[in-house]
Image 1 (tube, helix red, strand yellow):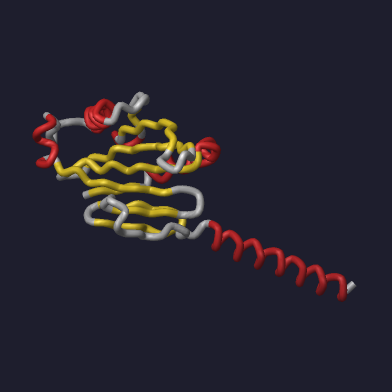
Image 2: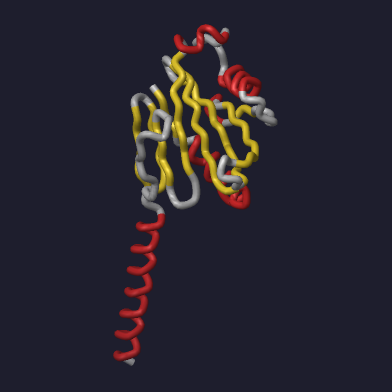
Length: 166
């Protein structure tokens, strides 16, 4: 009986240790920051420069491309610091001839999504979130392969809620 209890204790210990180790590595997050923009994401994203965006974060399943548009730079378009995220989302959709309808998400962030072929001929799904900061609109474009859209969209929404700006 004593051998059985010792073996059971070792097995239970190993199972608990494995579960704790696995949960720590799978749920590891990191806060990525640029200028007055921060987002908390899984730690498998990389910070890359020189892609024509203010901030660019790829991982094996998707990319996040962030652009800052100051209110001053948008003054010629009629958008101001008084404009809403929905106003700016509609302006982006119209200017880029995107077939999408903006919606209002959490924290007064607007978002819209659409599918399009890239220059490489591959079909992509785009989820664009508009976040209003104190001096700018932040355009956060999430993109993944079109076939992964159903899997990635809930994550895009979750990550958008983890964006903070100043």
